Length: 366
Image (cartoon, rainbow, N blue to C red; front, side, top):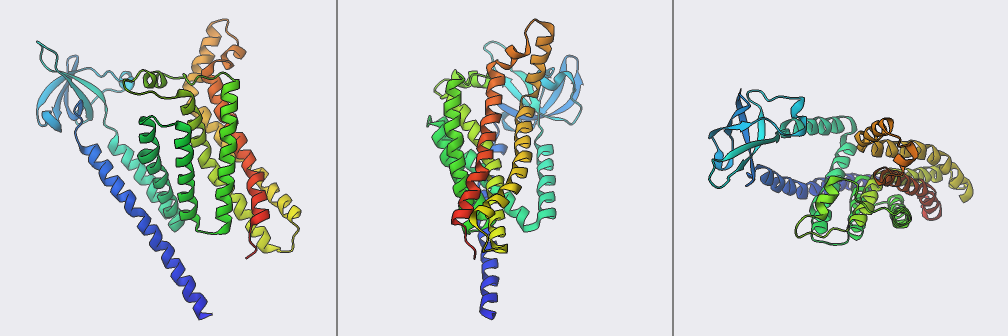
């Protein structure tokens, strides 16, 4: 008994040691990311508002070539400038333009929102750690790992011209492996959940390819996409970018669903090892169905919220013209978002019976 307790004690400390070691790459990433943030951009720099003047503002440079220099700028030109005005002490990003035969012209680009963003992030981290303790710590490390995969692997590979779907699929599988095995440990039920995620993700990929083709979607649904297409030196596959976005949007929900189902089946099997497989499957599916309802609703609302202003615009346009709702719903911008919601939801719903069957078939009673 003493030996068992010692093993459990050591395994617990080894798990914490692995978690601490896992932080090191993200500290290094944060250091380089911070260095990049603090390094002045050649095209823009931060400045402090000294006072409003007629048709503009008096500013003082805080970094780069214009550090400690005073200069004047025109009125704000960014989207929120009509609602908010600058006050003394505000920090903004400024761009300097040198035109032949004229003095340097300064233009205010945006507010510097970094402090409030970091404050909001700090509140989130503290709250997660305070409420969830080590589980919350694991979740934060997993989140950092996922964002690192996107920033260090997926985005650079896309810029270099690699296939967006293959890059996202490989990166997504790597993210899930890191998240599941670091947060939940190296157990059979977690390996089953991981396998369920992979199968469901492949099913989502097949559906994405099939229906983006059948629905004649081009992927040209925003100004950002048009800008990417016409960027010099880049050749992005827009439809594959659309499919890659669907995969990334599905991944986080699949993690929750598959882990929950695998853990549920494991607990039911431990509670009654003599239970018949079909009974175990039926019991687990009863709970899984309830879980799916809430998850799909969350997924749909999250996608809808992302293009709510555009929906309002279409409703207004339809009210002012003879355009009917059916024609509006047939617009590619709307259809693309509907496709995202439905394809992701199908992948999530399918993950429940897939993971449940895998856990019933291959799960351990130990």
